[in-house]
Image 1 (cartoon, rainbow, N blue to C red):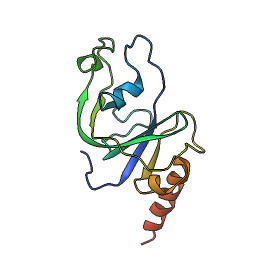
Image 2 (image 1 turned 90 degrees about the horizontal axis):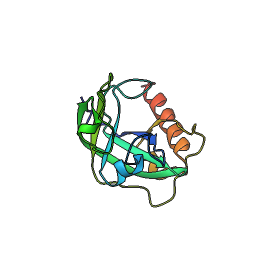
Image 3 (image 1 turned 180 degrees about the horizontal axis):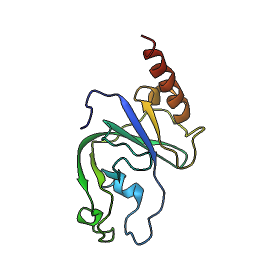
Length: 148
């Protein structure tokens, strides 16, 4: 169940190319279709849909989106004809994204592994110079809240 009152943003990286056998790129899925998907709760992926998701590629934050809707699917081809028809063992969250928005200034990646996914509070992505700074500020705030 999506937590609609959360200001946490899940920041993921998008590869610039296409997966083998695909006819659509990761970036086009987000920028042209306003969709995104990931495994449900596997290998560090969230077990519940976040309220916001952000995308980074070309070493910087590109866009932030509210997740307007989601469904759980096991065959991506049913929603993307450019992806091979294959029933997956693991279910995927398929998100419908709201319009993208972003800070007026450039937000570089900073000290994050190339394929790293991080959580940040929404406002920190607008005030920090890097995503890693936004992540660190968010962690400090979260720790302070635990003191009360």
